[in-house]
Length: 247
Image (tube, rainbow, N blue to C red; front, side, top):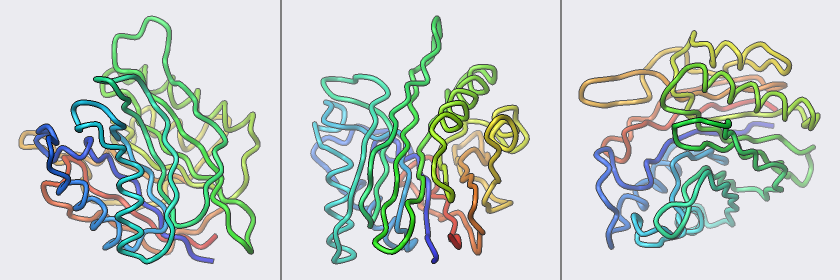
């Protein structure tokens, strides 16, 4: 069976420059269009706003799922994990899927004494009628301090090891570190080794003074068949990274 999954830091639907959403949902509509255009069945999202003032109290996972239902004429499901409260609502990670999702874990990646934004890891089972569950995870590591990111990855890997999650599984997210960084290497090794699923080249973070590949998909028990980075323009300062796998 083939599954096409992506990961995307959507910057709260505020565009590449981070402008307030106000009453305009066009950027969220564009995000849904890009997910549909990429042919995704599952997507792990980071920097998702839920009912906060910055995004005019829109429930972004629900809104995106409803738009994807319009595009695909089928039911879409979602889960959300808050990293912290923000302006009357929340900010965190989400998973959207064209198949039912069963929440397994919302893991706070907060480390005592840290001075950076709190992060969270969301893990779920993707349920098929004629297939064993597939593990799907969404992560977003700290923007500052490689030691912090390494600790966050170790927390994720330790939690997965305790869960004995189903194989296959796929994790997608914003590593905030390049290929070869300590956090990246920990994903590939440690107590619960995973493989990078691709693509091997291309930048996923696009800013005027800085371009880098920092968004990745990792897996276990899957065979990548094709992968890429979608040019999503000014929809976010990150681009959509995707892979099609045999599971």
